Length: 156
Image (cartoon, rainbow, N blue to C red):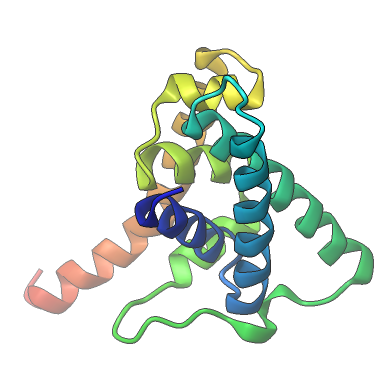
C-alpha cells in the first residue's frame, strides 16, 4: 500500500468520527486488514477493498460506541480557523450509509462503481445515498453562507 492510500484511510476516519483517538485506532485496524487482503492476492481492486474494510471497521467501532455509551467527542478533532459545526451536525443527523457514500465519492474521489462493488449494492443506490447526503449537508451550510453574506454586505 502506498502513502496516498494510507493517507486516504486516515482522512476517511478522521472525518467519519471527528475523534483523533478513534480515528487512529480505526486507521490502524483497517490498514492491517487491507494489507492482509492484498497479501492473499485477492482479485479485487484497492478501491473495492478500501470501501469494504472502511465500512466494516466504521460500523463495528460505531456499534461499540453505542454499546458502551461512550462519547465519541472526548478527543474531538479541532482544526484552527475552520468552523466544523455544520460537519458535526451533519454527522449527528445523517444516516451512516449516506455519510460514508459522501466521504468515499466526494471527499476521497473513489469511483461510484468501486463503492457499489465494495458495498454489494447497485450504482443507483450509491447515487441515491449521495444525493441525500449532499442535500442534508447543503442545508447545514446554507445558514452559514447567509451569515457570511450579511457580514460582508451589512447593508442588505
